[in-house]
Every structure is written in structure tokens, then in C-alpha cells.
Length: 173
Length: 265
Image (cartoon, rainbow over all chains, first blue to last red; front, side):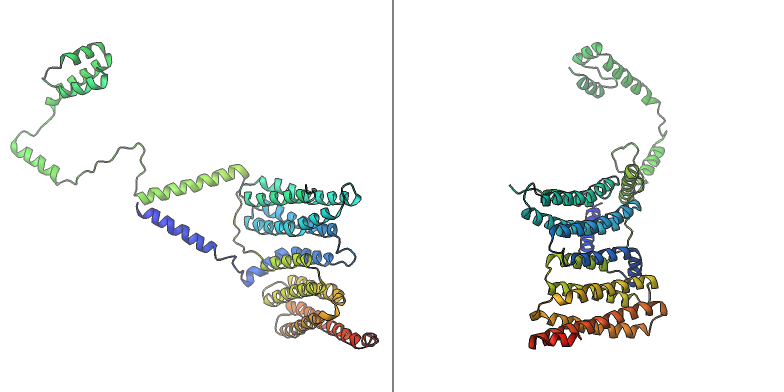
């Protein structure tokens, strides 16, 4: 019976060590499967990048926020499908990507636009419209993932991201 | 006097000994202790009827039998105790716990989410990172460098998977490569300022290497993979030529205002 705590401690240490090894590099066969599965997302990421560079619009923060919201929409659809298939790994992977898009793509551009546009202006209405569009991508996904036990971590991150989007369009006091 | 005290005194005085007066007073007033006293009296009465060895030899034999048997370790009695060793009971408990958690998960949301065991896709993560980089630092040089990194990722992946992936999947990678070179690099190369045109030369070098290596590999792989590899080699070759030309044009235009026009014609 005294050995039990020792074995439990060893198991915890081993788990921590395995966890610290970082993501596993997929084999060629696994990468081939990933290619088949993620083709449409590769296309979305590259088209999204090329759209960001459109000469006459790339300086516009709201346009950039829109580009990322469109990209987020595609990721959200894939996450929904993965959640329906109970594929926890994929939900986590794509959920992290989506959080990145929101944190580094949507939020900074909305914040930048907020600083630039005056209260009550037409541009501000466009800012709010863009904010709502992003919120409308994140909120239904949150609600959907809440229905399944096991996705609490990613729901938490999405909720935090949505809050940041909502805050980004508010005037600093 | 309390019942507990009275019952202990009754136990101590069971048999022919006389019950103390104060205990007797309590027993006469307490139905419970009276029942206790009656049961003790019954035990006293039945004890002599127990079968005992009739002779000294028999007693000795009985004692020997008792002493020869394994000592019995006293254990606290537990109702419904699970048999087996401590480890077996621990494992059984763990299994019960796992079943309970699964049961709750199934009850709450149908089949619980499963770890598919499929690793994350490094190419997808990389493409997304480059996409975000494009928005973070949109200077023309940085844009070109980022596009070159995207092209390199796509080329690497196509070559790595040339012998294992389906031709349609490889063609999709080649199409992405083509778009990055033609719709990305070649469109935005002109925005790079004169003083940073070296960036274009560096990228042209990379494209030249790609055109050579992808072209070579296309000769060694099955036809399904050869077509997309040739497409990548073609796009890289065209990109190399065009970027060198743009870098050259800018050098010429620096030397003479009419040089650029001559170079382009």
C-alpha cells in the first residue's frame, strides 16, 4: 500500500515530462491525411493573406478586421464539424488558431479604428457593424461547444476573445 | 446510574455472584437492562451444556490443534468488504471511477469527445502565422519575405509528400504555390523601395533553387506527383526571372532615368 503514492508521483512526473515534449511531429503518412483534411483551410489562409494586401484597402483597419472575421468564420465552421464528430484534438487545435486570429487580427484592428473614428460618425457605425459581425461568429460557436462536455477550456478562450472584441469598439474613458 | 454502567456491572457479576444493590435498583426500573440481565442469565445457564473434551488427553489434543493452526489476525469487520489485495482493490476503484466519469459524460452530452490521436498540422499553423505576420508589419520588404516563407513551406510540403499524398492534394498545394508567387510576390515586388531591392534578389535565389529541385524530383516520382512538382518548378522559374528583372530594372533606373524603360522593353 505504501508503494501506491510513490507510483502515483512517478506517473504524474512522467505525464509532466511527456507534456513538456511539445507537439508531436506528424509522420509523412499523417501529414498526407492532414493535407487532405485541411486543404480548404490552407486555401482560406493564403487567400486571406493575399486579400489583406489589396493595394487600395490594406491601410483600412476595418477592412483588415473584416478579412480576419471572414477567416474566423471558416475556422468556426470547421470547429463545429469537429465538435459534431467529437474530435477533441481538432477542436482544440483549430480553437487555438481561432483565438489567435481574434487576438492578433480582429481586436487590434478594431482598437486602431476606434482610436481613429469619432463618436457618432458613419465610420463608427461601420466599426460597430464589424464588431457585431465578429461577435456573431464567436457567440454561436461558444453556445454550440457548451452543449458538449469536454470543451470548457476552448469555450473559455472564445468567451475571452469575444469580450475583447466587444471592448475594442468601446471608447476609452 | 446509567444503562451503560449498569450493563458493565452486570457483565462483571454474571454467574453465581450477587448483583450489587444499586445495580439491582436500576435494573428493576429499566426494562432494557432487565432484558440484558435475562440474556446474561441465559448465557450462564447454557455455558455448562457446551461439549468439552472428556479427558486430559483430549484436552491436550484440542490445545495442540489450536496451537498448530495459523494465527488469526484480528481485522476490523467491514460489511461488504471487497476481496483481493490492496492493489486489486485500488485498481477496481480506479476502474469504477473511470466508468463513473464516462457515464456522467455520456449522460451529459452523448458520446464524450475523443482524442483522435492525430497530431496538429504544422503547415496549417505556419500558414496562419504568416497570414498574421502580413497584417502586423505590412512594409513591402516584410511582405515579400513573408510571401517567400509561405512559398517555401508549400514547396517543402509538396516535395516531402510527393510519394505518399494523392495527386489531387499535391495539385492543390502546387496551385497555392502558384498563387503565392504570381498573385503575391510578382504583384507586390514593385512596391519594394529601391534601397531594399536586395530582398528581391534573395527571394529570386530561393525560387531558382526551388525550380531546379522540384524539376529534378518531378523526374523521379510517379506521374501523379510529377505534374504538381513541374507546376511548382514552372512558377518558381517564372518568379525567379521576373524578380531578377525587377531588381535589375531598379538598378538601371538608378543609373539612368531611361534605363528602366529600356530594361522592361
